[in-house]
Image (cartoon, rainbow, N blue to C red):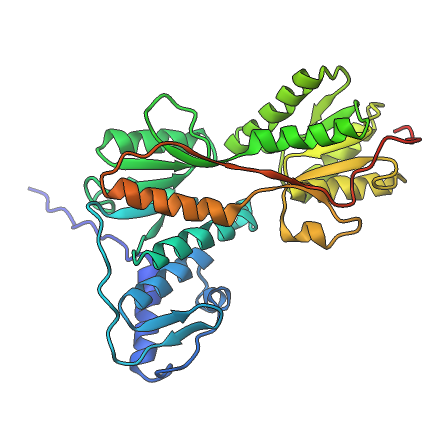
Length: 362
């Protein structure tokens, strides 16, 4: 008989960081009343992701070792223990992608901020795990309630497997599969429709759409909104181009569009970031914004209000999305029946859109 080595389960990074902070506090490196650096700074110091650091800090707060004072920061607590954490009928978990910082550094932190705010205010603690951890044996408690951020079809298949394995599942973003899985999402499609409505009201009819990542669920919703608006306004001279959310993809796609001879008077983009690349390419071609080309972004990232001209864009309430997801997950974990919740996107008109007058030929 051949002896087999026992399987060694690695300690999650957030637990490793948590243990190191406990050791530093026990050694009086951090003393009662000391204010800790911000979580981004600590994450850099420990060479871990922000969400990993956030989870470690959250555990120490739950154990009464740290306290968080809104508007002031996180402090080392006195010896008095924290109040007892309330419990739900089922344990709760939030699933995020491993490489969220590379995918979108603007979207995920705000969603996580809203989620954590809501759970902390309610007195609950919800671990955040990566997709790849969710299906490892023993990681999820049987029957736990799981909120999963959907980005592409692979995550849709994951939530379906989790549901089939007996978990209560909540999708964050638009679930389009065939299972009975509730979702909390922002109506991206209607946001793009509102952007097109705005441009049509300014006299635009040759409108191009700068698409997002192919295969991304949010990008598909935004493209569907553009097509719906095109049909509703009976626009016959539109173009869809590009295939990514990043700045460089918008820049490259815009130069390729300008070389085709198509002459749009306005462009709607699936992301503020790709819009920045588009604007740079347009300026290099000698076009004034919005005098020669009106532009609408999507997301309302902080950069949009600081560039010149200030970016007209579709605002997503990502913090509110996180808060709503947390409250819905708590209800789901308590055995309540929950329905889809759709938050509205909103057009924010700034300085990159104007009526059609004397446009230059592209």
